[in-house]
Structure formats: C-alpha cells, structure tokens
Image (cartoon, rainbow, N blue to C red; front, top):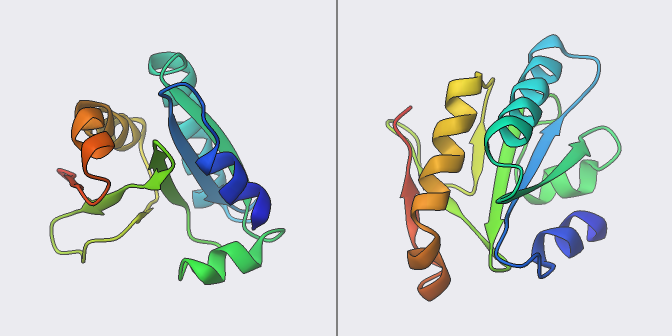
Length: 131
C-alpha cells in the first residue's frame, strides 16, 4: 500500500498518475489492464505515469479503497491529490470500475487532462465521465 501511495503522491512534473488494478487470473481484468496500458502508451505517454497494481499482492490497498479483489479498476492522482469521478448512475468515487475498453480509458484520461488546472487549484474538483 505504501508503494502505491508514495508513487501516486510523488512529484512527477505535472504528470497525471494512473494506477491500474487487476489480477492475472481473471480475463476481464487482464484485458482491461491491456487496454489501459495501450491507451497510456499510445496516446498519453508524455502526460501520464502508469502504475500497475496486482490486487492479489496488494489486498491492503484494495481494502482501503473498497475495491473487490478481481475487479478491474483505475484510480488517478494529479498534483498529489486523488481525483474523484462522477459517472451516470454511480456515486462520486475515486475508483473507476471496469472492465475497460480502449475508448473508456481514453475518455477517463482526456477528462482528467482537460481538468488539470481546475484540479490543481481545487483538488476537490469532480471529473465527469460519459460512461
């Protein structure tokens, strides 16, 4: 858990930090992780730092965020603060639960990048997601 939070709060020169959580034994989780990695490396490599978290190895972190082990999930930090998201029919949360398509991941990252200045001045800003 300490490793995830230390990485998330590190000063990465204005980069958005994305933690992609998943497990190797569940296809939806593996496929979602692949989509997150592809989106970051293809579209956002210079703006996003990616951290892959194995939910089996870091159950303490998952439990602290109410993440069910096995659920493909994404958490995002910017300027050392956790980003919270609003999705249709979901409560506001820092955890975006998948499974993810490439387009979903792209939408999450674009929404955060568009709100960087708002997030820097007000870490409580909630980012709206279309899905």
